[in-house]
Length: 419
Image (cartoon, rainbow, N blue to C red; front, side, top):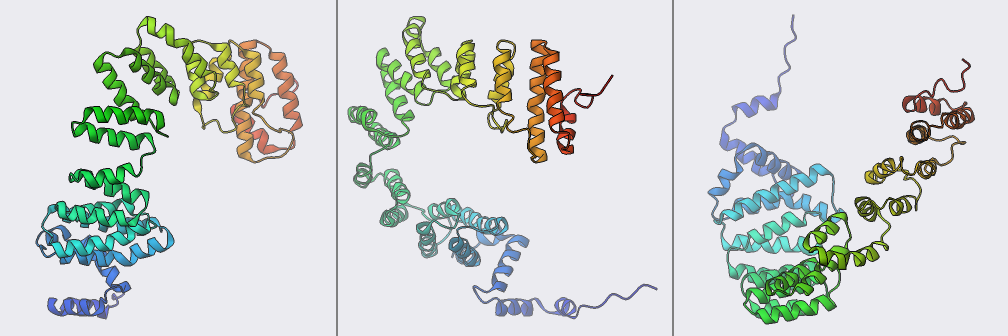
C-alpha cells in the first residue's frame, strides 16, 4: 500500500489564499535590500514578462526597481573586484534589461537622471567588472543633447583618461567644438590621439589643418600609428605622391613585421619599386628572430636563414605555443637532417631522472621525431637502435616512462629483446 504523501501546510495555504493577500504578504516581507527582496526580484524577472511591464512603465518605476534589485549584488562585485560567474551573469542580465528598456525611449527624465547619477558612482570606481554594461546603461539614459552634455560634464569631472575620453567623444558627437578641442589638445600623445584630431578637422572640412596635424603626428606620435599612416598614405595616393605613399606603406609593413604585411607591401609595388625596397625589407628582417621572420624566410625559400632562426633556441617544451615552428622543423628535416636532429634532441631535457607521466609523454613525442629523422631520412637504423636501446635501458625502472614511449614510438617494446 502506497504511503500517503505528506501535506505541506504552507503550500496548501498558498493555494487557498486570495491574490491580494499574497501580494500584501510578499511586499511586507520584501524589505528593500534584504535577501528576500533580491531573491524575489531575481525570481520574478525570470518568470514573468518583464518587458511587457516595462513597456507600460512610462514613469520609470520598474526600471528603478530593477536597479534596486541588482544594487546589493553590484555593490558586492564592486567591493571585491568581481565575483562568481552566476552572480556576474545575474547582474549583467538585469543591466541589459534596463538598457533595453531605456533604449525604447519612454522613461521619464527624473528617473533617467536618478539612474544615471547612481551608475556614475560605479563607473568612477571601476572595480565591479561590469563597466561595459554600466556604460551601456549610462548612454541609454541620455535621450537628447542636454542629457549627453550633463553626462559628459560628469565624466570630465571624474578625471581618469577613460572617462575623459568618453566625455570628449560625447562633445564631438553633439557638435561642441570648443569643449572637444579643449580636451583633445590637452591629451595629444599617441598616434590614435592624432588620428582622432585629424579626422575631426577633415570632417569639419578643414583639410589643410587635418594634413598639418597628420604630418605632426607622424613625427611626434607614439604607440599605434597604423590609422594615421593609412590616412596620410591615402591622401598621397590621391595626389599622385608615389614616393610618400610607398615610404608610409613600408613603415606600416615593418612596424609589426609579418608575412602578411610583407606580402601586402610587395603587392603594392611595381617590379622596379620592389627591387628598390626589397633590400631595405631584408635589412629590417635581420633584426627579427621570431616566427614571423621564420615565415618570411620560408616563403622566400631562404632555408639556410630559416634554419639559423629555428635553431637559435631550443626545441620548445610546449609544442602548442607556436605550431608553425614545429611544422617548419619537420619541413626542414630532409634538407638539414643532422641539424634538425640536434634541434629535436635539445628539447628532451634530463632523461635520466624521474618525472611526471606528462613529461614522459612529451619526451616520447620528440623521440618519435628523432626516430623518423634517423631511420626514414638519414637511413641510419643502427644509430637509432643504439641510441634508443640505451635510452630504454637507462629508464628500465620507470614503468610510466616505458608505457608512454610504447604508445608513440614504433618498435619501442621490442628494443633490446633477443631475436
